[in-house]
Amino acid sequence: MVRMISPIVKRGSRVKTGKGFSLGELKEVDLNPGEARHLGVPVDQRRSTSYPENVESLKGWVAEARREGFRTPKVKHSSKGPKGRAFRGLTSSGKKMRALGK
Image (cartoon, rainbow, N blue to C red; front, top):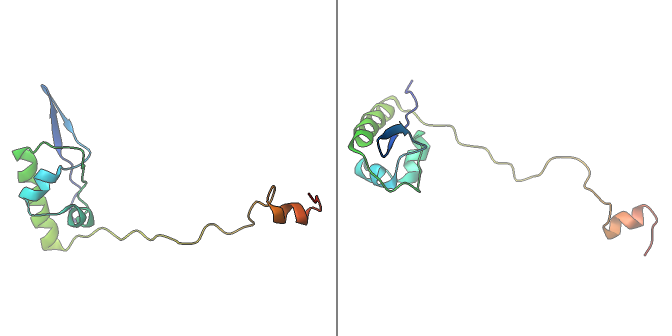
């Protein structure tokens, strides 16, 4: 199983883990943001910097993930809301139901 990956971000003299890879780093590895998210690579579209360390770690990770066939499961979205009664308090049908009239 492929481990999850996170980039490094340099801020002055500090080095910390980032929220996602920049679009420039993904472009250097020949990935678009959709493919990256499908492989489970976090993408931060606000970042504009590109670090060689991130590119090298991403190249190795993507090669290993493609070799093992690693893919994140697709999120299932439901088009229906939760079951139950809708609130009919101040609507016209609610007033009729409670015999409040006009």
